[in-house]
Length: 317
Image 1: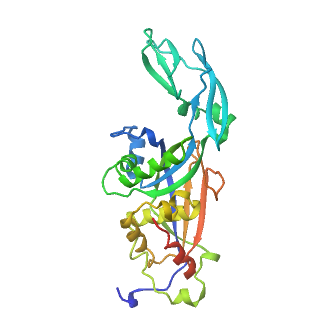
Image 2: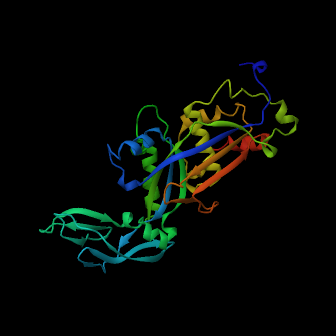
Image 3: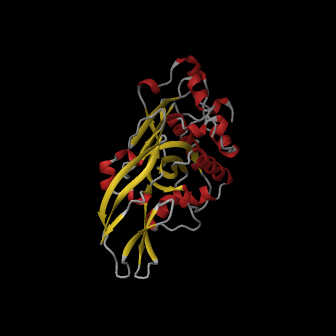
């Protein structure tokens, strides 16, 4: 492609918006998981994943049962200190369900047993901690710290969770996270992103200076981003925004293919990126060491300045 076919940078920016997401503790990832048609569809088209930390919950052994009412305390450890959350709730028993028994240590489940004491159902501490009455009382419970922003791009109809489960580098990363954070659950959060839009952004995102105007870029309208390129742009923008500690260079997951695809976007004509990620439909709030907990995050990146553009495309995926 010669310079004649290229144009100066315009005032158009990429608008990247998440639409739906599905979260699951990493320890619960299994082969051939079926979540129903709607969630399976979301997981099939999701290419962006976040690894997040959330306190790991268990039940206090001082646990009582009165018919269909169970009472006790949820336990977790936050920054080395034990926190307790009392609960008391009624769980209707089915025809073959007779009572409740606390599972052996580490006491992270309550078993529903039949008349012979055989488990026929269960309630996990993790599940109980997400009940509306618990979250109303302790909203911090479902605040997720973003530790790693990655992509699992692969052609074909594979679930995002399956792609995480079968990715050796990501599995090694999860092992390291579990070792470093023994008091936490690592949550895998997969996000669906809508096809990108090109939008005009006034003010800071307009081209500035002769150096930018003299640069030559390929028209994004004539050379639209493919799905892999969009995914890499989403990942880079999320890394720039959250600054996740496990995306640091010394913890980097080697992904040369994504790196190459990401670099190919630098010569395309967009002067900024608007990245959004939303958990409004869920009980979770995302945060990091540099970003407070919120249900909806948006960041506007000005890439019209040559220095800022170079810094952004120096992000390692």
